[in-house]
Amino acid sequence: MTSAELLTDWRHRALQLQNAINQAVIGQEDSVAKITIALFARGHVMLEGDVGVGKTTLLRAVARTLGGAYERIEGTIDLMPNDLIYHTYIGEDGKPRVDPGPLLKHGEALSIFFFNEVNRARPQVHSLLLRVMAERSVSAFNRTYAFPYLQVFADRNRVEKEETFEMPSAARDRFLMELRIELPEDPELRTALMFDPRFHQVDALIAQLPEAVVPYREIAALAPQIQASIQASPALQTYALELWQATRRPQDYGVRLDDVDMEELVLAGASARGMSMLLRAARVHAWLDDRDYLIPEDIQALFHEVIGHRIFLTPVYELQREQLIPRLTRAILAQIAAP
Amino acid sequence: MRLILFLLAFTPSILAAAGPQILLERRTPPPFGHRVGSLLTQHLDIFAPASWHLDPASLPPTGPLGDWLEIRHLNWQTRKADGGRRYRIDITYQIFPNPKESLQWALPPVTLRFQTPEEQKSQTVTAPAWPFTVAALTDITRPEDQIALRPLWQSPPALLSPYWWRLAGLGLLLTTLLLVLAWHRRWLPWQRPPFAHRWRKFRRALGAGDTGAALRLFHRALDESAGHALFAHQLDDFCRQQPAFAAQRQALQDFFRLSRRTFFAATPHRPDPARIEALYLACLQAEKRCHS
Image (cartoon, rainbow over all chains, first blue to last red; front, side, top):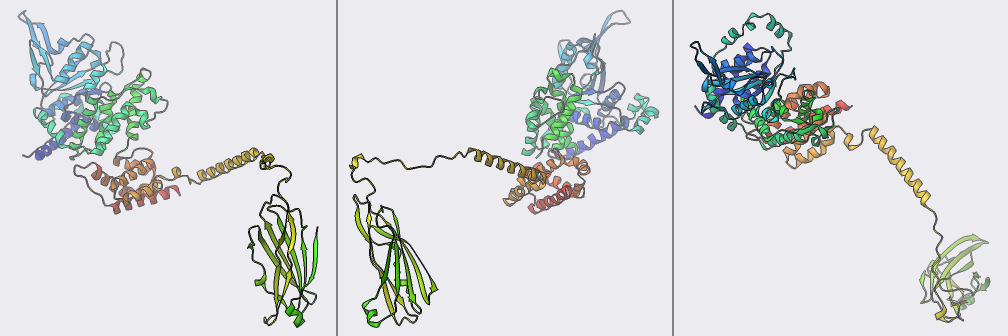
């Protein structure tokens, strides 16, 4: 099979994966599409959303269709890094026992690791999580455990501020995208979620999904081929560069927000790593759209999710971040033209 | 002093032929008090009997008469009177030399010829030389080294600033009124609709074969019409907000497809200039409908 045929075959599988997940999690087509992009861009995702909107179901569906192991851990204030690695207890024979923790339990087969309410955990735990995300490995018991197929999904508690530890900027920059999971707007879908028994039994719902539609072990090798197959023209590069610069000094590009002093708004714009991740995700978007070149719409489709959490506001505006960042990213996209 | 001469002039030939009586009367300025640059005018009033007329070729020509004298003007006119014809001839001389002391000079004699209609007979009449005195411009009793040149006389400067201020105010008022009118009528270049504003540049770019620049101008016109950077997936919203463009939706879709292949495709496409121009013209028409 030639490289082009291989990419076409994988594209069909990726679309099958999306369709399968959309069967279990209704009304989340956009989020599912972006998670699919994150999978093939090999990036970690921060999920945001209210309680009970289907984040766990969504991730279990992804793990099922990928075929890898799925683990989930709840962030709590007393959670320590070791709790992710091992679990100690006294066995029935009265002797101490040490079992592998959520990270080590499945070894290399771990494909989806979901850290719920990550900002309830202490910074020491964040530190461990960052290493796992960056290096896909962890040291324990005098050896290094590798997780070559791991994708981390985390959820942030946005409601409570007490006993929480906001993740530092560097940690948020490690996530490819921050994705907001909302309830579907369509009343029919909301009614189905309430009354259709299929959605009440999550285990049964997930079990109905086809397994390993996209074999998780092969994604790591495929991802570089996808990146290499998508071209970026000079005009597109100019557009991406202007977007990047506009995140740093939006006022220089005529970006205006009502009731905001643009000179005082942005403390730091997108990082080089952030823009690199944006283009990586955009290339996957183009590949899923069956194109071998990038267009501005590929970047626009992911701009807010990939770049929004990488723009840091000055303290006077930071408390309004939830309202200002979506307005800012929309205004930047509306102001920067291409070609 | 006024000198009046009555002359009855007969040439010997005419005396012999007992020709008609041609009367000449001369009036001159006073024969003194003239200096360098002075103008002297002698007036000749001539009566010629019927059937006699002045030969204009006998009038002295204007121009220099020597180193010191020049005829500046010569006017003459004639009318019928007293059964004959009267002539009025005014000759203005100007004198040039600046003598150190008063001198006696004379205007040269003026001889005029009269003829019958068929030029069978002719007769001349002459105003004799007229002597006059030319005085020195400076005081001849004063040594030259004591004569100082006085500065040229100049009129006192008029106070023009109030007029300038009024003129400036009027100009400002007129300019403001013109600007208001132009703004009201949307004549100012930046007030013209986006497609019309860029039409010349667009044509120039296409004419120069720079289809890339032409497409970019097209994009900027669309962006300005939409009020933001417009992309293909926003066309539906754009057509809803600008209903005049709704009829051009297909043309705009074609344009974005063309632009995408030109600027972003892995193997760039060279668009047909005629097609781009046709698309632009379609949008120009839509814009006119929008602003009419």
